[in-house]
Length: 543
Image 1 (cartoon, helix red, strand yellow):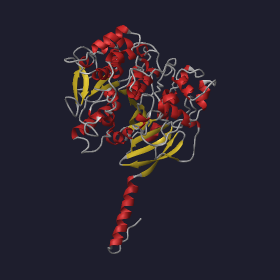
Image 2: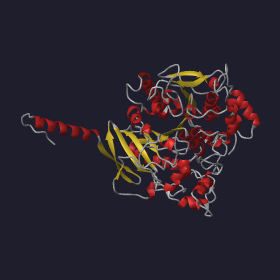
Image 3: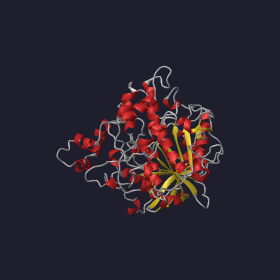
Image 4: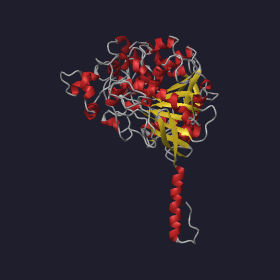
């Protein structure tokens, strides 16, 4: 296309500016193709990043059935990968639905998004980071704007892959007559199949399949830990980062239940030992077998029932196929790879769930969490004293700290200690920033559950909405995560950030955004973990 060389006129100038604008837009976003094992895909390149969105990694799944690789259905046509594919069904209460991205949902949702630098990769290929989202295994989507991997790819020269996986009853139907034990957690099987897809296809994007690091938050962090525990001595990844999640959220006394309870204002876990049967009854299945009825039910009917809640469909024991009967026993078996690990929590994880909830007595909450264990109930209640001159001024403060410790801080500490004792190179962090809030006084002005994600992904609002110190901390954290993925044996690549040992007096916990608001300072992990001895025995239990 060529601009007119005739004399100036207002009309010709307007046309020229319009054409220039169009050319700028075209140049800013160009198509780019990649050939994968099931066929060609067309994505977009802009600002030095190749984005391939909504690439199928599995055939459309059958309800409650294991996923089947997409390569079983090859295609010759160039498939469009310029827009997100549907999220998995978000069967959640309306109060939580507001947290999720808008967009189509479908049971046909097993897709990945890939964010890769557009520049030629090094001969050995780029580092790959695979992200698993959280949501208590009840909801979540790789399409969430917070999980956009563009900043990672652009600033850290890594490839980010974000797969969808099935949640709630669609991914975790549980112990149901007619479903073999090894098929009770098809959502975790989705995650494993996505890793197989990465191994087969990541070279096409300039990645090295031998340089894969997994990272995830909350249920995503638990998923990463479960993948580590059930992938044998030679897993298809070389390092893991678990943010606010471990296998103990699935196998421990809480098993994710009190998180759902805190969300819905209930004591402890929801009183629902057989959620699948409760769901079937709500669908008026009558004399029909529950599995047959729920499998045949229209998806809209399922969503209608599930959205009224509370339902909790977590991963369950499946003969060690995807969920170990005892994480402690599995870690001690010698069958788990000793790949490097980075693991951590946020200072006030549970506050995002307890704020706005009605007052509850601490002893009642503890009793609901540890039913039938009077000795443990008394010990835990004594460990969180409430009143004037006590560590906690109100029962809600005590419950917030108790839930933070049980679900996150102490389970992370337990895993970090076992890993370090087994010779696993382990780095531990505590996210402690109070420098950012999207609205004045908002909940993210405190280090609550999930508040570190935007810092890691580099997706904070631009200034002046975000203070310079928060932006600097985000850059520091993203670089530390990427450094770990690029060279796991060297940890976060910060000399002051030493390996975790758990030994008395060891300054082995990286405090992110605390004393050093835009970086890390080291503190004694045993101070943070002072109440964790209350829970160690419960983490060691079997499911």
